[in-house]
Length: 250
Image 1 (cartoon, rainbow, N blue to C red):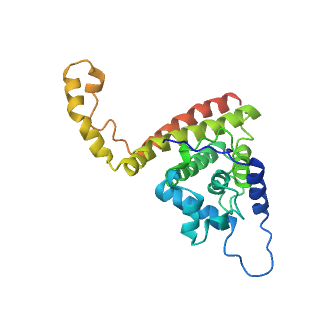
Image 2: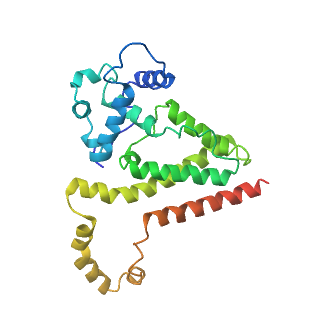
Image 3: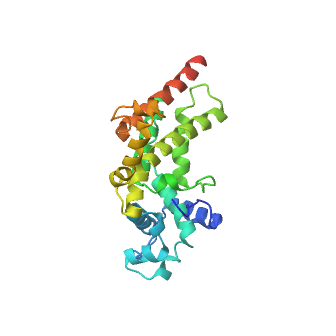
C-alpha cells in the first residue's frame, strides 16, 4: 500500500489520555451526548473496513455521523490520534475472556486464530506500521492474556515476548497474502483472475524454454491452497517447533 499509515505519529500523550480515560467509563448525569469517542472510533473502523485507510479522514467520519467536522475535534485531536484509538479498539479482548487457558499450545492456537480473524476482517490492519505502538488498555489486556498463557513453559521473559511476536508476525504475514489481492482489486478495478490471465501467455512461453523445470513440474493446484488451510498448515508447524523447545525445558 502506498502512503503507509503508522501508529504513534500523532500526539502520543493525547492518544494515551483519551484511551485510558475512556477505559474508566465513568458515567455523567444529563442528556446523552450526540457524539462519543467510542462512536467516532467505531465509525472510523467501519470506513476503513469498507474503503481502506486511504479513504479515512476526519471529514469522512464526520460525514458518516452527520455532524460537522469541527465537532469531532472536541473528542479526538486528529487523524493520527484517531488511528491509535482504532488500533486499540480492534484489539479489545472478548468481554468475558479472563484467561486463554492452562495449556500453552491451546492458548497460542486461540490467540493465533483470534488474530487471523482480526487481520482478515479488518483488511487494512496488517498494513499499519506498528513499530511504535501506543499502548492502550485493550492492547495491554490482550498482551497480558498471552503472557500469562506462557507462564508455565519455562521460557524466559524475552522468550515469551519473542513467541508472541513470532506468532503475531506469522499471522500478520499470512493475512497480508490473503488481503492483498482484495485490496489491489479495490484499488485498481482489475480482478486477480484478470491480472494473472494477462501474464499467462508470457509465462507459458517461459515454461516452454525448459529453463524452469521445477516450476514447470508444479501441479495446477500448487498455488490454489485455500487461505484457511495455509494458515493452519503454518500455525501447526510453528507450534510443533515451539513444542519441542517446551519439552526440552522439561
